[in-house]
Image 1 (tube, rainbow, N blue to C red):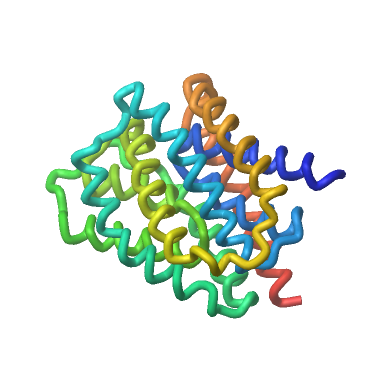
Image 2: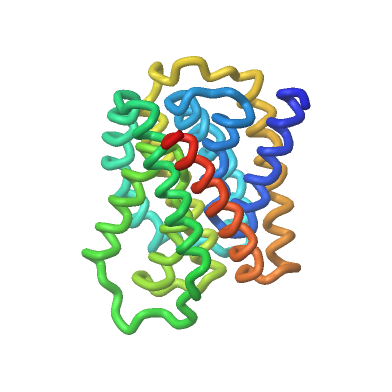
Length: 247
């Protein structure tokens, strides 16, 4: 199968997940870039940030147009992650490939387990600003190190800690992902290695188009069903990456 077709197919799947779930799809971008398209782990995480930033910003526009973004809640949460994202993004280029791959496998597994857990159905009795700031900072660090958006962490926090309902939480998580990804990408400017734009450009374009379709898909299939399907895919990816490091 040609590189272009692989890039288009992988981008479409990731965009669908991001648009439907408000996060999680970006976790597949880096493994796809490494194992399907031949990127090194360092280059894949930088390319992943480019793809995630463009796709999340596009999906954010669609959700904001429908009034599903809680700006006053999301902006402080996103700002808490900017500095950690920048610092982690600058440090990630110095990590060995095996360490990056292992860390990514762990994050993919965590994302899957998060998706399999029942979502909070009611907002919390009390908003906890300190916990929210800590979660925002941790999310920024994950984004910077591994080139993923971290929506699988943002959505549960926005629901369980900041009191948003699921639909606005999904939209607001895209705001957080976009801001953190931009900060991490700024730190990596000039350090991405061989980024191969002839692959990144079609990958990103397919992901953006997929994000629009994902938003429509979410209106036809329950979020819980989509999460379960995607969670099992992520568990398989995590196991494969970990086995690759060990063997």
